[in-house]
Image (cartoon, rainbow, N blue to C red; front, side, top):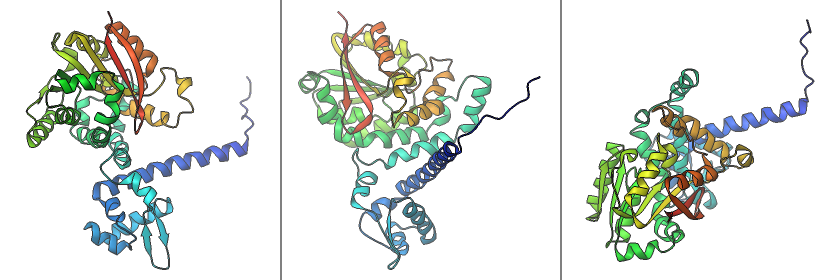
Length: 360
């Protein structure tokens, strides 16, 4: 019997990796603090100028003791600057750009993803052992609100002026008046932005979530958008033929249980000269290409804890968030599409836009 021997360890590498782990744990903790600040309006209040914890608590209408501890966490994380003589905290202007405001530059909404995913860790761990997954319904309705927060600023600032310019002649066709659909539309904000920008076109949004569709309808009613409507429908069973000149899918395909059927349904739903605009994750289908990408760890984590598991919960394909451009192109071709271009999304390092048409 060979005696077990411990491998020789490089102690410097052990210490280096331990430091990386503590950096990761600290980053996770600060993510929760950023989420709290976003939920309570503390960043917006802090952006108005330097303040003590009592002054900031008064501005935001919150309890000083909690605000003081929150500020201490973010001051030690170098999110806030602290002046001990005056006991004031300052949110630097450069930091405020990334943590406040309605546009895509505000990254604070991203912090809500981590606590949302953490709510279902026990269920995901069970799926590791037993198979299956965590059904999409378990993430609702909170998932609906978080996804709305993540995408709303981008759609407001970039959908018409940044994303549509990547789609060839589609903006001109929308201005002239066509029929368009958004599959997996969530709360429908993209549809409503498009409907407001192109009043001569008509738009329909499809989503499996009743509460998301109700929010979409309410927003359209409040904005007086008669050219936008919404339906609760599983896009894997769309059942529409040659009805739309354009179909959009914003970060939806990789979550689906049956993405291949959904893509074929999109093909059938398009007229002969129709176009499919698919915004989806910027990644490679090959792990080795994604190693070194600063966003890849986040994307694979989101996949494990949401995108992949909701598909596997329905015995689905389980594509995962990082299904990647190579597989996306292959599946689009199998569905009958020609990919005309793949373009980066302005102000969004996580996504690309595929412009597709029916392959003659």
